[in-house]
Length: 267
Ligand code: CO8
Image (cartoon, rainbow, N blue to C red; front, side, top):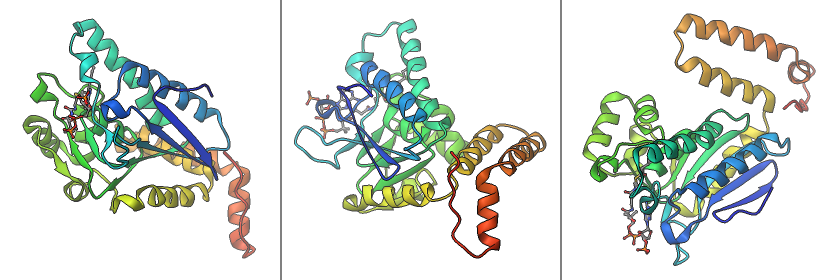
């Protein structure tokens, strides 16, 4: 993987920590960062030694690690966009965002501070969200005369329901981590110092399961979400057939029946 200006990547024990590092702009997403995310995620998807990706934000310029996850899309870049440029920016973002959503590895957003606008949106593109107690979520776009354009109008309604999504987007109210947990926007809230350890513990638990089965389950959930229930359950049955023919299925069930620990290796 190449060198990045706005990202860092650490891999250990089958877990990648991918950090967005633009301290001068509270990790706001500009075109370069979106391109780098796309390259990094494309590379990660090919790697068998990474089972779970934790996405988080780097420290601000004063070194505060819990100031900001991502403070949105980069306003100084967007301010002079023409309509076609704005549209192209949204489409550019959709590539890495869909990768986070659909890649075979599980993606966990570890939200370490502000997750505003595009920051809330990139967290929502991940499979799971864990927030530090000081995290702040919001969609301030309508206050800037724009709309959430990195999938926010769609993913927020799917995650927390249409009424709550409309309220947050129309009022531009920020909410704290406790409220984000209450409405189902995040899976867990932990003290800031425990954020990465908690994300890694969840990642390790996921990585210890059948990784191919987890990837297929992720695809089943994602693909079925927008289908009618009959077609969705049929799609699930097809995928159940696929996982039935794997080493991990024989080994996983064999291990249970023989009362030994199964060695699951498919990915
Ligand atoms: N873009 C660019 N620069 C930013 C951004 C941003 N989103 N957020 C913060 N910064 C910069 C500030 O300009 C400041 O720079 P400088 O030090 O050079 O003045 C630096 O980061 C530190 O920020 P502050 O001094 O403002 O720090 P505070 O602690 O006072 O405030 C806040 C922190 C509350 C997070 C504040 O920075 C803020 O309100 N930021 C903007 C939040 C926002 O509105 N985000 C949404 C942006 S719009 C968006 O995300 C749209 C997504 C969809 C686009 C779709 C296109 C198709």
